[in-house]
Image: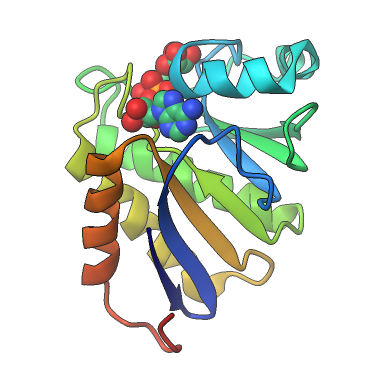
Length: 184
Ligand code: AR6
């Protein structure tokens, strides 16, 4: 687990389950285009949220790679779910820009809805095949670029499934320039 405060925003890497982040206003779903139950993150989120989440999602689907939509969280211990469709690696191009767009749109939606905290899984790095390290660089890089302009979001958490991905996140977070604020 590692944590830094950059431009007044806490950014952290933790190991865990995205469906069990009760202290976060929003959790991000690594969705499919149809916004339906799936495997991995989408399985954990929909299973915990219950069938009301799929119902709320139906009129919002389909979404395109790089897009994000926001819903309620139903039985999840959060206020909202932000559903992002990541690129399928090797198919949806330019994959780096589409992946960056997911993180950017998710944070924009959090800001528009006055949310203070948001937790991300490693979008596209499971079933969609995006290699872990370039995906993590895009995730952290995109988020950090936005930090100086944020007014509502004060806490951003990356929830990694397993030690190797969490250590990768820790390493990239430690490499970031300091920003303007105290380190935690
Ligand atoms: N909490 C946190 N991370 C998780 C969890 C969890 N509960 N479960 C898996 N991961 P994936 P994608 C990690 O496949 O690549 C779905 O079936 C996992 O180890 O969930 O964007 C959808 O329906 C990996 O590092 O998302 C879509 O069709 C990362 O989260 C498709 O898969 C993302 O894995 C989306 O694929």
